[in-house]
Length: 183
Length: 153
Ligand SMILES: [Cu+2]
Image (cartoon, rainbow over all chains, first blue to last red; front, side):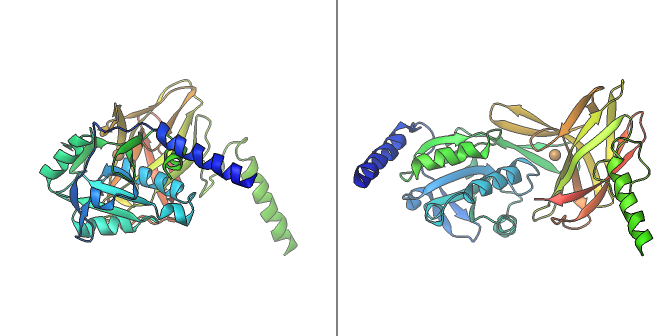
């Protein structure tokens, strides 16, 4: 009886993975550097599920909110599940976000985030591949400039393919649901 | 000793009924009450390295017959304080400074992440979780309102 149950469970789990669409017209491999200066190539980390978010450290609202929501989801996962996931925060502010700053900023969250950075040209190319966008905007404000940017969190599977994303205004449960279908 | 206790108890009772009766200079009230304007759920966000900025949020309830127009904000904890809004275009979020925020009459304005909010730059030092800070809202035709709020995650 238990075996049947487990079998059934396995089937339903793998089926639910199949149901998730593969968005292979967007996304793809990239090479950047992490907050410790080490090279990070997406394909070299295949085998892990990746969460990818474009942001910047001076981002006052969207980025900390998103990271806090990811943290909420993270805490609902078992250690074993956590070990299958990498959280990627790719900076779209190459000018200000040094690796030191990324390290300090991400270190302030109780979450193992890999901060990624590259040149402006590299980031423009990568965001374009990910159907994303960022643009430096000077504000009539004390903030020297801000960066308008796409605010969704991409969910990338173990083979490096995008299997979905969560918009900024979606609840953390939406991210958890996506993850559960890939875990 | 026991009279002090009674007094303390009395103070508590007064503080509790504060919401119904008019306020008597409550010092560190989280939700200052006035006939016209109520402020609820006021909180600030902790700053993160490089501690360049932070934000504050709250719900303002306008019981009056006229719109209340917020024209500014200030706090001793930051040199620059601004009113901001967030525009959403598809999946893009664009933060912009605005001159005023309106609390509609018989309505409310919710300042929250991803929407209208109060924004601070040139912080005196890091805004740590648990810090209490004073913040004053300036209105076009209404006395300024000072709230004490706590810094949260
Ligand atoms: Cu803002």
